[in-house]
Image 1 (cartoon, rainbow, N blue to C red):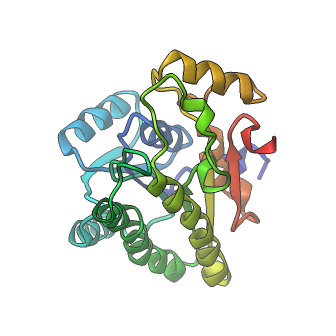
Image 2 (cartoon, one colour):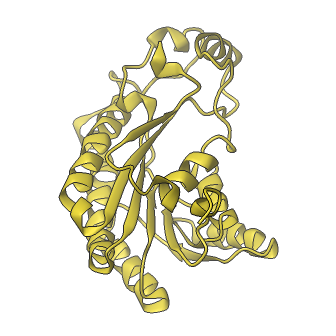
Length: 260
């Protein structure tokens, strides 16, 4: 096998949670499909999901829409059953779905944190409980969890001056915990052929206010915010045999932000 062949995902079954989302999810699903995988795109909004999948399939890819609510363990169990009934295996699981977040430290409440934990923490755990044993049973699999630079470093409050933006504290808490949970899975299941890694994206350009964008781009070494194309290579690398000896890693895709 040549080195470029090792990046191929032909014959692999991939599940992407939040896989039709405009921030990360859609580009992740597209990248895996472009690399040859059969992709199960699992999102809360099934109709939106179907439209997204139809667009990919019109381009000749093999993708399938499924409903998923990561705050509901029954929804997760249903997704697993439908995937296994249809395909009989799972080779890649990308945990990209998140529960909506907002508000700074002053606005968030303990009840909000409990709701955030139900989806972002309990949901992640339940998805791994559902699919990791399948991978272990078949002797191979790749878990890719989408964390953040703010799971590794603290946010810079100065970025948000002259805007109404605030960095939600639950986001930092969840994304930091995700990285160590990924390491736990990597260590616990490595000898059964399961790899687990995190991708930590930098700031994603989403039409934020000008002062924020200018400060962010001035600070980051590559001089721009992340866009939808920037995660594709990292996702395919970690999903494929090109990374067959890589596990327990938090891969920074941040334009150099965390190098400062």
